[in-house]
Length: 83
Image (cartoon, rainbow, N blue to C red; front, side):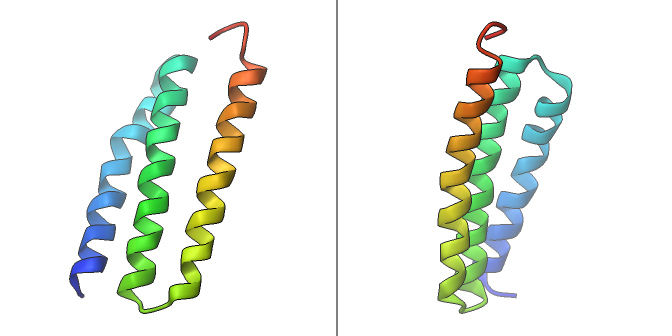
C-alpha cells in the first residue's frame, strides 16, 4: 500500500460524516454535505488512479465531478421552494 492509496482511504473515511449529514439533516444542509462528499470522492478517485498507476481512471473522477455539480444544481432547482 503506497501513500496515494492511504490518502484515498483517508478521504473516503472523511466522507462518512458528510453522508450522515445527508441522511439526517434538512435539505439545505444535506445539499452542502452532498457537494463536500462529491469533492472528496472525486479527489479520492484521482488518488486511487495515481496509486494504481492507471491514468485513464482520472477521466472517471473528472466525469463524476461534472455530474455531481449538475446533480446538485438539479436538486437545488427541484427543491427551490424549500431552500
